[in-house]
Image 1: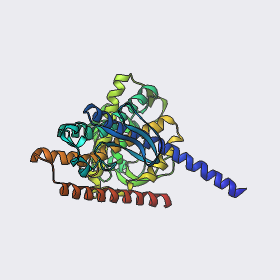
Image 2 (image 1 turned 180 degrees about the horizontal axis):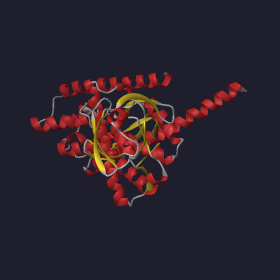
Image 3 (image 1 turned 60 degrees about the vertical axis):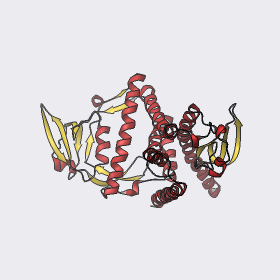
Amino acid sequence: MDLLAGIGGFGESLWGYLLPFLFVLTVVVFFHELGHFLVARLCGVKVETFSIGFGKEIFGWNDRRGTRWKVSWIPLGGYVKFLGDESAASTPDRHRLAQIPPEQRGGLFYFKPVYQRAAVVVAGPLANFVLAIVIFAGLYTVVGQVIVKPVIKTVVENSAAAEAGFQPGDRVLSIDGKTIDSFEDMKRIVSISSDVKLTFVVERGEADVTLIATPRRQEVKDPFGNVQRMGILGLVPDASEANWHVTRTDPVTSLGLGVKETWFLVSQTFTYIGRVVSGAEDASQIGGPLTIARVSGQVASVGFSALLNLTAILSVSIGLLNLFPVPMLDGGHLLYYAVEVLRGRPLGEQAQEFGFRIGLALVMMLMVFATWNDLVHLFS
């Protein structure tokens, strides 16, 4: 009976992670590919396939324009395949294209003007950003935000904050000139600024006081027991009833806040990447599919709104990642188009093929590295 109970518990745990993960990934990928699809249709490109997942088709249907919409067995992404594509990665089938008469090339992506091809490519990442903005805006309007004022209740002894001279009762007004409206605002800046001197302006009584503090990189466990390395000051907020409230905003204001939050995530990502490249940050925080699955399951246990928030965050990450100028990614295609504009003609077939091979190698290296991090965290 104990063995059967253990197997049952494992099954429940597996589905508890798998279903939220598939929900998050499917929504993000669907909207990414939908962006490509809609702008392609707008530009008169013939779309052969719109697939959620890879591999053999489970079920599907044809729309009135001949596009095959389908769901496939491997639910780890998806793709839009244009007429004349050799593969789901939108590499052109040059032999097939050469056999198509000029009068029949109107619906082929490969023969469209470069500005239309660029528009189709950039539409995928743009759709991810729009999705994130809409989700954030919806959450701000319907669920609201819990705002804890940046008022300090406790300063941890021997911490970076104690060394900097923080005192209980201080209210943080700004960090490096950026206005701080909540304790969460401060926490998010501090967490990615380990070993970096930050200039704080705090309200202390009737006066404004300037303090210089350097967050220390420490291992911190989140509510689910996951260990993260981040910058820590050693401040505990005053979360008394007078210092926190839930605020809901109207849809227009929420859209503005959604744009602001999406831009914050983009800038935070660039800051983190820059610090990883410079050696100031630990690259072990980069996670892959196992981390996404684990976090999806954990967040789903909190509630659907939390899962939607994670979906928005992941959507920003996927959109931004795809804009990196790496062949195989959308940004790589945009790089080729920029070269085409400058040269007045596309890169040669061999040069493009060489670039795609390099891009594939880089993408595979990133996937292996992220998966390795996943396994290290899983068994540590």
